[in-house]
Image 1 (cartoon, rainbow, N blue to C red):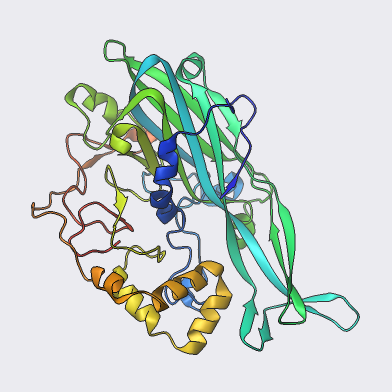
Image 2: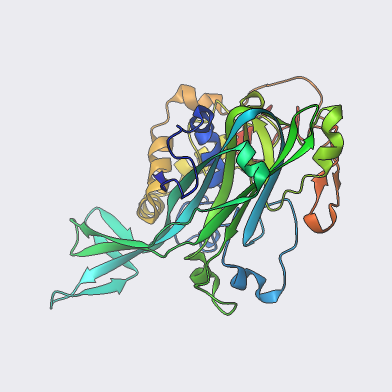
Length: 399
């Protein structure tokens, strides 16, 4: 994970909330969901249109056909993402925020010509391998640390973008090289807070992440826009002297305030017993977790691990060769599946978390111009299987 330095105005000397590192495996499942889909080959139709969740592109391109609809789900392309959550805090509370996303990186394979130059090609064949041109991604994150009192005095803005860059890798098994290029991503985060209930020391905290880039206009192609886009964008919230409240199942004293929170293209859920929040473009229940049976991410949470692992094992040698050449993460999946011990594979067959009957998801209310909000008093997904890579009580062992 590539970290950005603390922006000017943010407190850099305080170490990051330890809960953030414990959240990393969970958040990585969100970050890389849909990154590559089975059969993990570049030639597969499913892998020709990528980057589906938490996509924050330049505003001029996103709004070429009109304003973005205010929704909670982060599966639609937008230029901003807004998290609002409730927190009970003391007077010395400090808020810590970590913004994470992927920066798209173009890998271009080049053949060395007779005159010593290089020619961009689609692929290069080697005696035991093949090298393919493809889009990769570089993970980025930026930490912000601000006393709650400072946010009560007024909003604060911080840059969380990433610079462009280029690296060249000489390919030792073939006469050529791979050039990896990234274009700059410009983004800002605005932090704010307001007091809601003084006797209960209840506050609303807001984190708004915006793509502020102007590099592409409304007539650009999606591929051009993605070069300057935040992908898989999500946010951690934590800190000291504070405790977060559930928006899906708030205490009675906070139900009306929960209804007033406006979450756009992302939704915050409790983790770490309320000491931290994950705001995700994929809607999750409170206290989500990666299924312990899952030996690793398959980037496709809509599938059951056992079936997907079996299908991956059955790829032909030629298909596996192409998948390995497509992306390093695809090669890691193949290695893990091909060497999976029988006892690990058997655990994928199923697990019972709870014998309680599932409950219906919470209804959602229209939130006017600010977008929808949960009605409160219900816990979506509690006791029911999840259709994401993040498991709470999944009876079929899917991850």
